[in-house]
Image (cartoon, rainbow, N blue to C red; front, side, top):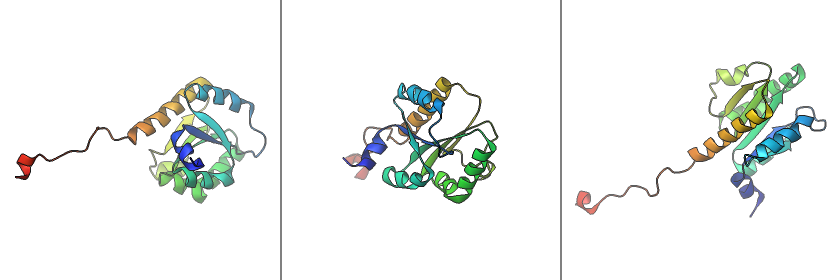
Length: 157
């Protein structure tokens, strides 16, 4: 089995670290809460987003914006390629911030791939919400019936 197939079968949220420093302390706590829901939290860098997206189709991306510096970086990424990836359904963005919603995504009416969460939020609650959104996405991609419709011989004649 190649890496692309394994990424699509597992429930993974990629955490985009905007600081390029070591992972924040809260990352490990959130990873534990998500793991209890069967979701893995994996750190990723900006340069890796498109390569993971190409391997797995659609990726779930968690972005935490807590400072003006992070806000500027996030808005620049949306203006560049990330906004288009979200709009086209290649990336599902979970945006946690103490600031408002991203106006460009809100203006484009990107609703099924952009999820805004206003901070403060408990780790347990946000883990539940993220896991629920990922589960809803997996269920919406499944065919609801067992078989396709068939025409009977009586109708065909």
